[in-house]
Amino acid sequence: MPAKKNTEQTNEMAFEKAIERLNVIADTLENKNPTLEQALALYEEGASLLSLCTAKLKEAEVKIKELSKEN
Image (cartoon, rainbow, N blue to C red; front, side, top):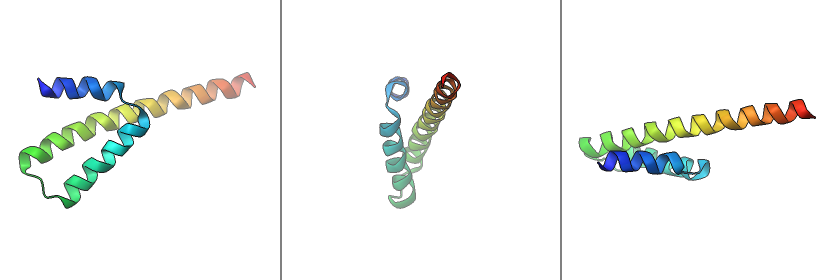
């Protein structure tokens, strides 16, 4: 169940907060020597955040193109 809650929270997260969290995850994986279970959980969270950031960037790109056409 916690994974579903994390996914729901991730879907509502702002882009900047998601990037911050991705940086924390990367630092933890690179420097903190997590257990395999912790590393897998962090990787899963990171993959979800990456998808969120990619989607938000695509939305922004579409909006910019729409605004450029209007002018």
